[in-house]
Image (cartoon, rainbow, N blue to C red; front, side):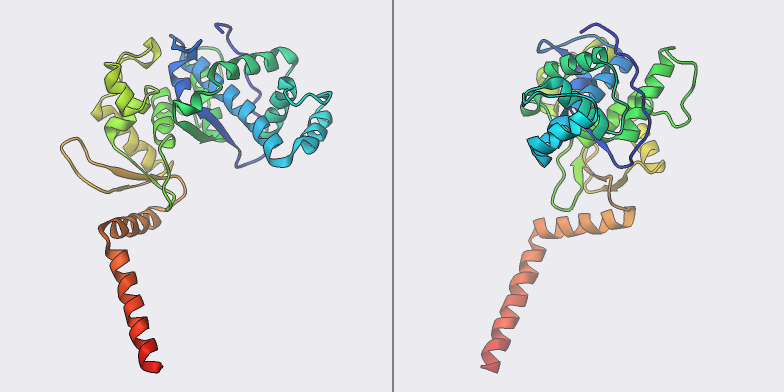
Length: 288
């Protein structure tokens, strides 16, 4: 697993594609243990997990027959084997709008995915837009001196990790999630807040030292200003309080939905509903 991945040819064929990968990718989990790595390798491993997840998702959504035809169209014959990993990897590349590579690169994707398979039960999943992940990968490759071409819209290592932390949060009914700075600190190191404290903040070298409150606040402010997400403060506290984040709302829409969420949890919505039911019952009785 120490082999450096070949570069993915990130040709944009479709808009709106997403990569799904476990948060543990940040830890470079190999053989079940965190390992020292580099930003470039971590991001390419996230892509590998996302590619295989996309292939598996296509087969589950469309059925095996449609998947088999799709893979054959790409030049692969699954030979009736529903566990054919090369077919799943090839389908994943195509679904993600990436050029399907040679068998050597497919082998690396399969091997990488196997290291993380099943960890979604232990770690939150991150669902990141393709253009964001590709921009982070291009920036990491440039920073490592592996390419001379500086990306025009690159995403830095700290920005990538902060985005992973926020995107790993659980979205509620209204489509936003709450996140405090301590949760972002922990998740940007590949851990939930609880595990981060239990592990005494021990992280692989590429994650050290953990980001401070000031670093996280500054980066979150910048990402909001650049329009990566809408953000709305819900509560204040000695440790920063909770902030609502949404990648789908406008700032005004988010403020309205946070107010609705807060009203419901205070019981205001329930009281209004009961009042309306009572008024309806009285009116119905009078009409009768």
